[in-house]
Image 1: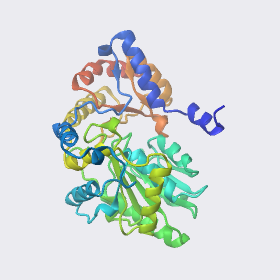
Image 2: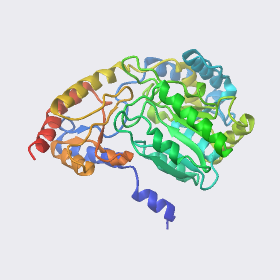
Image 3: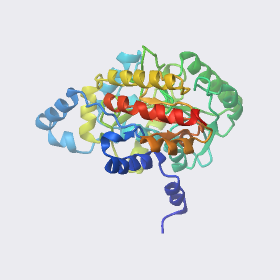
Length: 396
């Protein structure tokens, strides 16, 4: 008999993954070319050639025990140093290998962080709309989620409610910019305001409050949008990163955690994170992909493909009458439904063979998410279906 905790997790299992599976069933029934699956953020573009070349060269020329063996729980020191230098070059920071922990993707980075800082019933603030797995990550480590209502004007931070909901039990605040599901990017002004509020609250309560910045989409921005590097604005910060999107290798499960030296109790925190990597079962990040990441840290896939997809889809949907804030990053779009019931709306979309995700999955009912990380031809062929869906509700 499984635990009561897991019974709840199974019932509340990923709606996005469920829709992805349903999309495969529909594709078998109607033909893949006649089903427009925008459910899962699975990159559609191939990794850069440097990734394949790095894998081949590492396997052929580096010592096997170095490629396939155990290492420090935090990862290979030379890999971490290479990644630190890459971050410093991009963002003007001053990190070394000591500030980097290699992780099993951004999800691994978040879980070892929460495991390290949370005591039972500590509160973790999230800003709706947000990636639903945060609920599980927080619960995994006996934390209590505190949700801030969405700012649907620009999908930034609802600062008034945020300030009101910080308590002496607040241990962490999760931010995700560029944001899944909206594509919004927090401005420098947003980050400065967030940091000032937390600094004031730390003084008020005499506690430490951490920002956990979840950044798998950092490089995926449009129109020269700038994503502020959070460690420059607030010292008690962890930054989780994944190569899944930028290098188009989500199945390889490789990322890292940045821990700035200025963080409270740095040495103790680093030791705890290293132990967390082991006791949560990760032990260490995949060894081969660590070495690949070090070689390809400054490379990306052809991300311009997503910019083109975004323009086609955004221009067409707004022409059809959908209300939508234009994404500044990621490969997601978050239009408003034509009815209040987003689940019913997404169910109706299947009549037109569209697989889209209800906004309530991200704690923001009345909207739906489109993952446009697919080929351009699929987007173009889907447009009549999006128009027909809009027309269905315009006639009511």
